[in-house]
Structures are given as C-alpha cells and as structure tokens.
Image 1 (cartoon, rainbow, N blue to C red):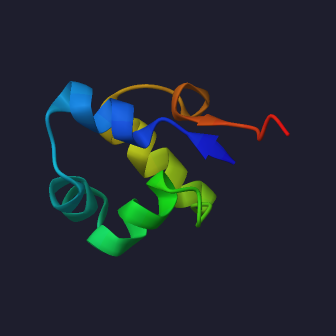
Image 2: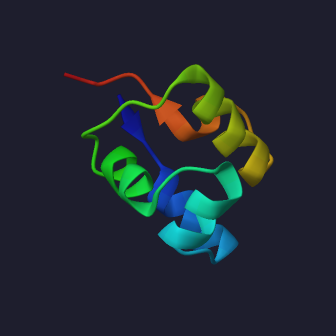
Length: 65
C-alpha cells in the first residue's frame, strides 16, 4: 500500500518521533510505514488520519502496480 505520510508530516511540521508519540507507536514503525515496508493496522490508520485531521483515503492509496 502506498502512502503520503511523509508529505503529511512535512505539512504539519512534525518529526517521525513526534508522530510516533502521538499515535503511540515507535519511530521505527512510522519509518517502516513511510518506506512501504509495513502496512498499518486499521486502528493505526485511523489514528494517523485523526492526527492529521483527514481521511484514511487521503493518506493511503492502493499499490498502482
């Protein structure tokens, strides 16, 4: 699954660590999501969308391949 977490973080001016603390995961988890190496649980996807005040669909997109 592709995502725009890095873009949303830049817009909000938050670090991976800040975001991880806000959604109660490790910085490594945020890094893995950004790099497409880990797909978050639905619960975490909702937490990320809540943090950025957007929808899950604004952040996550199906793979285009």
